[in-house]
Length: 320
Ligand SMILES: [Fe+2]
Image 1 (cartoon, helix red, strand yellow):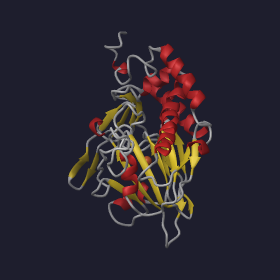
Image 2 (cartoon, rainbow, N blue to C red):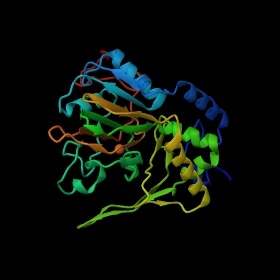
Image 3 (tube, rainbow, N blue to C red):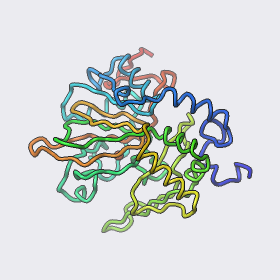
Image 4 (spheres, helix red, strand yellow):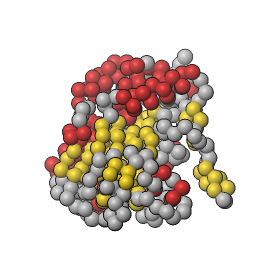
């Protein structure tokens, strides 16, 4: 079937590594990906003096990790509860358009902590319970895609609250190596449907149907929308989708490409909305776990030629 007429082909690029038809490009990309992918969490960690104002070498080291694994972990000694930390860090990677989801604070950055107040108390992120595998904003409409994410730790839990992480490009690669038809199934425009969410006023968010894997950026980068939840989700009801979802679940449970970390105070995750989860945790009553979460519609800018680079204060670092 002509790819232009094939609805299953519309979510992925027609050329390049994420095209099922362009096997040569995929092979070159996958060989490089496997060679460069960090096989230990330590290789993702970059020590920085101040995330709000990175030195050129610190920024370069974070960009290098993100180019290889779509994620990096920064470690600093700054343990302030200052939202300027994720905001200024993001700006240095071209991130400006925050996803103002309904539970975010007015400034678009969420305080992720245990909350007894409605409506946050009804949602797992604001509890001490585990959160299963997902990418952020999988229920968002296409204009509000979440392409980048910063998770900054102000205070860790007394126990637990670990994150497992998997580069979504590695998930794509591992699925395609098992069976390219898994990728085709999960790229279908109707692969995954998240039903509408209603509140006392009616429909608060409309139903969202879309692919799991998609390429929707000028740079041709791959993105993913996924949740391991089993309620309030409808998978396309065919054998190919069921098999692909089962294979993805197995990869998430067993792959050595999954990296695990426990962010400490002053540390954070900078990523292209990779797959992640969170273990349950126990808070110390006087110093409960507090994370700042910033979700962006923008792509991470990782190459100097993409646009001039700015530091967190808005000054131009390169004199351009
Ligand atoms: Fe998340």
